[in-house]
Amino acid sequence: MQDEGKIEALLRGVILWDQSPPRAGKNHGLQVMVRCECGKVRAVNLDEIRRRGASGLCQSCQRTDSVKSRPARPTQVGRCVVLWDEPFERHGSQRQYHVRVRCECGEKRLIHPGDLRHPRFTGLCRTCRAREHYATLNTKKGPENRNFKGFKRIDKRGGYVHIAVFPDDEFYGMAPRRVGLGCRYVLEHRLVMARHLGRPLESWEQVHHKDRDKTNNALENLEILDGATHSSVTAMQAEIGRLKDELHRLRGALGVPHPPPE
Image 1 (tube, rainbow, N blue to C red):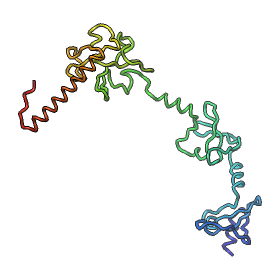
Image 2: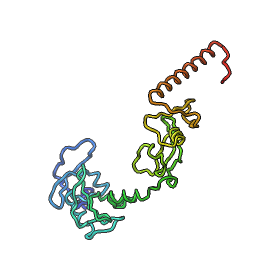
Image 3: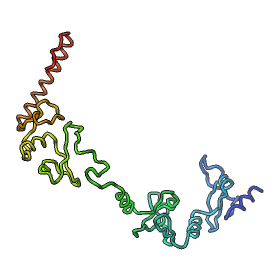
Image 4: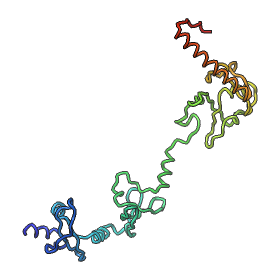
């Protein structure tokens, strides 16, 4: 009974030894009934009382004590003001209590009190955070932008070379429209042919590579064809290339020497 009296002295309630607690699960351990200062009776784990020194208060009284112990005036935390004088509100899927804070811009929002202890907590609202984030980005265009990859680039899908043109260029309209960019990229082989002719190319005019090398954009390697002719020539060249590869494979299988390259 000395242990029982010691446990009672640690509580702000009364242990009701004469009342048996309800049946608990296997993992709950030994429980006793405790009456809070407000008169509410509940079951408390005896090992938890010995280990942590439980106060014996019910959840309602614990919440009332936390509200009474909070600062009476708003306090500055990070870059926001915590409005302790306003009532707590339940928020979220678990219906936990949240406190209201006021951002620098004046917007109020609810946050969990545990977030105030986070070392990276600033208290800014979503709009202010986004404004500061975009202010740090590099919004310069052209060579002054740190992400600028040069005036020439190769398309990874088609293998064509693209050249940058600016609004003051007469061939600026040949490039596809892109919102928010000062320069646009046009296919180099079309740009070479357009500058040779001195006019922008029409949409139906196709520029064909004679040697099928998409990176060889020399003027002598280019010719203008209409859409139907360009499709036929491209298909014919592809078939010739396939037949050459097949002939090369058969010569190697039969041991026939290959002819010298042209």
